[in-house]
Image (cartoon, rainbow, N blue to C red; front, top):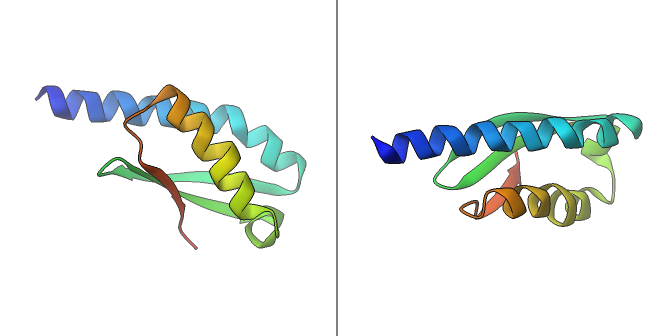
Length: 82
C-alpha cells in the first residue's frame, strides 16, 4: 500500500514539474504531455515545433529529465513517446 501511495505522490510531483516547464516549450511553439509513470520511468509526448527540433534530446535529458530527477530522485529516465 505504501508503495502505491509513493508512486501516486511521485506522479503528482512529476505532473506539477511538467506543468511548470510547459510554458518554456509553448514559447518555442511546442508542448509536453504527461503520458504515464511506470517502473520509475516517466513517459511524455513532446508536441508541436519541439517534436522535430534538433535540440529535442538536449531539452529532454538536460532540461526536463534533470528537473524531474532533482525533485523525484527515484526517476530513472524520461522517455519521449512519438
